[in-house]
Image (cartoon, rainbow, N blue to C red):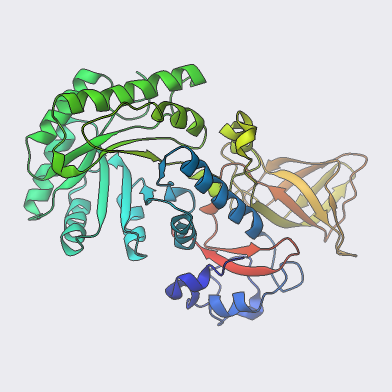
Length: 428
């Protein structure tokens, strides 16, 4: 497995201390790189519960699968980094063919730049003057830095232009018009006529440069395959209409058409494959981010690979280990992991395996169900066949990667035999 920490020396040199929950107390003062090099065992090497583990094999499998999927379908790939906010994983995604990394807010872009990310797609309209000053300075200082962001209003264009002019920006900011996914969707321009008005506003200022169109189908109310494809065809048609109207300066070199979360990238691949020939090459940019860890809930149920099994299957990489601290009755048990440790916004954790405190044997968590979470406890309902006692470790699957990563600053990367080969640093 790749040594992720060593790819980012400043992270490997960070000291292990009380800030990082779950790590061995006797590792205090070691660097992250030194602790990783010891290749301790997650269960016997001093790690304390609760502790979130990331499967090294599953992460590697998922990275390879999306790399080959994007290549097979002629897609560029800018995975959404807000899922993990982990520069070590960004590096691995780039090594596996990613064009760049997507961000949602300026803080995330600053983290990316601090760790050397050269291409950033900000999937939001950026109207914060302080952030635009920072962006102008980054662009002017590094001619190889490429940045794109949404615009979805004439007022937004005005604010961006005002801030960039005040900052003395030399390079224009590349923007894509965001087409809203449905009349009651999240953000984005609702009609093609309004999109044209935003594009014309961009064309009227020197601080911005129109390079394409984009949007996000994942929050479309009542989304189904037909509605998602209909919206994607509108997006492609918008790019063609802009091109026909001469709204793209040939100097931009390529036209960006971008969409795709982690639930409908098969539809994106299908529709984008039929993009007509335009006056410039088209960068067909997919932005799915949850794949890197996948999950045992939301995306296990909704991944496009369920519809296209011939293309492969993602593997859930998270397992949250906690310890049984109370067994008050035959029907109840409690472990020491709760809302502070586990994603719970979409589904409760799923009890999957038990590590016997007496023997070290790992067995299926038969008859064990997570029925609720307190701040620091998981409530377990235990049926007649449940073999569980105080001291046992319970391994749980999690739903929703984005709210799993953000509860942990340093996550052990663990091989199948329990060996910790690295530690993944997050920046939320």
